[in-house]
Length: 392
Image (cartoon, rainbow, N blue to C red):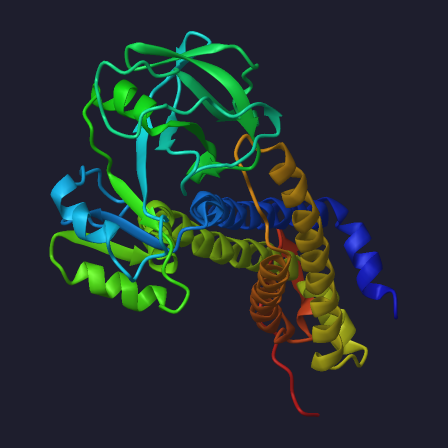
């Protein structure tokens, strides 16, 4: 009797396999959706953390450094230059703006980052090629010649020396960075701030961000609050900036995905529940026979739950493995978290087993007499004419 539930599963192996495949697909989708969101969170933080700055300043009313695009007014920046709250020489101009560069003859998504190489805001070295040549002029003059050179992420599949078009200007790739992408694999194109002003703003001498480092004896939170209270600019710490980015670029757009993940869990439970219920109804006669020869409800329930548990564990395990395969082949960055995956797998097994338990409870209440006087028809039993029994 120990192998009874295995033999029964072998007898109905087609349904067992289909159920396990259904669970596998659902679990892999749940983990992949979670991996996409986790990947977006990681990419949202990569650039901000790489700069080394802990104070992010944007125009008043912009909603934050990365939320809106508002150019800073130069007069409002004057107090920052002489501020004792900031590390000396750390105040850095920055342009961070979405663009549609022409790459290999096609328009593509990208973000232009204009910064000064001796300040915060961009990579200090490259993995291939060289750094772009910085502008020789600190003050702004439209007639000053500036080298139209850029650094791109190696995932953009561009070679050193290739030309790309941003706006009406062509710029030349001179170097490559690694692992500096924005949300949903949006590549960053780094260039001198003067070049960014030329290709994006038509040589307009403004920037949309200033970043800096708080003085060593000052807390970034207090420094940001001090500048923000002036009413002319908005100042955030690095952590506040990261919260803004994740909320705006990840959590808000992905609310529907979070809802979909919950629905997939429900579907997984319903799938197992419905299939188990139909399968159990097909076993009404066998269960009646078992009970007629002395099997208790607990004994029958144990064997039924073993089947549900085995199918659920097999489906979840295969879905767990398959999700990592899909993540490696995905066209965007997907980062499946191992701890989250284990939690999802555990919840999924509980949901599947719980639905199987509810279905099994329905079936074990069958009267043993059905095994002898009932007829099975398409998984549903129907009673033969009622026969009167006396106590004699």
